[in-house]
Image: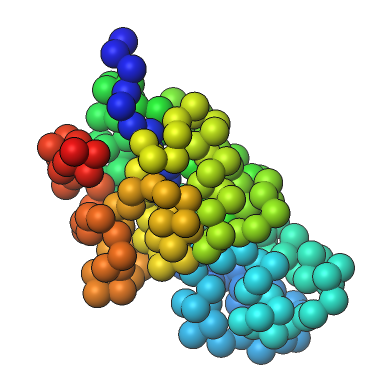
Length: 220
């Protein structure tokens, strides 16, 4: 098979799946269990960020690192339980696009602030191992988005230089991380309006609307 000229790096929530409602439900369950206030606006502000940033800086639930880690762990355990109980579906057009990339021999990797256990759980529920065999999770790097660490490590996973990678994102923090990594960016308007994603090279409503020509043009 001909070697691909570029690699695909996918954010997870808001790009492959829209599990925002399950994450929000997880935070609400945690809020009730921990007797802490939860503002839905804080949930929106935290898109694309790690729990270690969200809990102390956005929700204001805790500052002690050990307590932040405990809350973060319990929240993600709650999320995985909900995924297994309620199931999960890929966003419209995602599997079609992933199949195209697989057939074209394009190396694909997930680069997400989500922790690995969540990604493993969700990929198994979706049955997407054949499309997304590689991943870099938020708990595998020192700095989360908007720092570039996740995407740089993802490029290493698929053996591509950052300049030959395209990041597929839905969050402003993720776009900034991709830019800091020196990568091209395709934004999907799943969780944000197009006006909020103008730093991307291409903005689409769904992935299967992308053409080979539009992607190749990014490297012209």
